[in-house]
Image 1: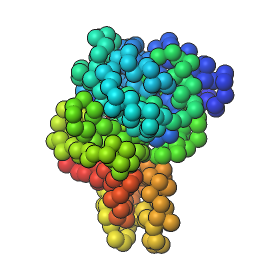
Image 2: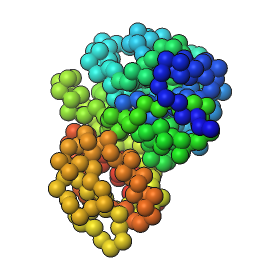
Image 3: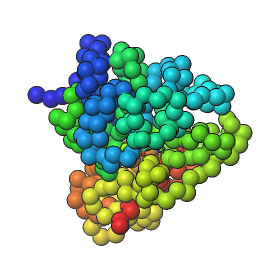
Image 4: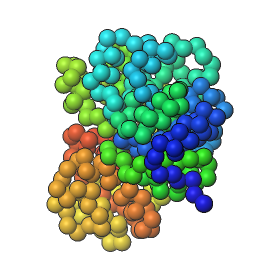
Length: 313
Ligand code: TXA
Ligand code: MG
């Protein structure tokens, strides 16, 4: 018996019923797999925190399938609409001011006056949201402080039977989580580098985005908890070559490695392999080392994730 289901109309309808009835469905998005529940069902939302073992102050992203839905619970202005029309569906998440007083939203928003929303670029995710008839809140479908899942098997390994259904959409294309920007003030602030490149956002807006320097250990900027993506074994980053007894993850022209994120030096390819390779490295049991990754395009998100993974208190 398994709770992994292949993608077909019947299983998507079944999954929508699970959401409507307060259950948890893990589903594919273009970034990573999400662990989804009905945003308005507090009990279901609580079971997400429980299944993940996630600190309760950490707010969740609502996934929607139509831009119009935004207006029902978030303050929307021209800038938000322009960004949504240009970048959605896609790996970009907005932090917006909440307008819905519905207390059922409190838990998903972790008590904040903001609501966090994105429209994923994945046919299965969009179909599931539409069939469920509600926004689906979904953190990445893994235990808190472990590596985000990019396949259905990863979800199963991390959460097992805590999920009612896992929809198997194969490997996620983008492979790192969405970029998160705070749009609640005049100046836009980058809260998490991710699948949408900072340069693309700045080019579109014609302005600079502020990179948040919030205290990484403070819950007020929960997306920035330092020890968030942690393999079990010691992890050395910016490693120029392998040391004795290390599992070495290379990038670009590096040949003496156990795995190479992208032999041709493509940062998109590297991002989509990142979490799966970190898992393989962790399972190997040796210490882990990784080549330097250029700080441009998706390299920003990759460096952000691996810095957290390498962080030791
Ligand atoms: O690509 C993604 O964004 C994936 C897929 C499933 O959509 N989701 C995801 O969710 O990565 P999660 O919960 O694992 O990460 C969301 C991050 C958390 O670190 C949370 O603290 C931060 O976003 N966050 C959410 N709402 C926030 C808010 N209002 N202010 C600051 N940070 C917020
Ligand atoms: Mg996560």
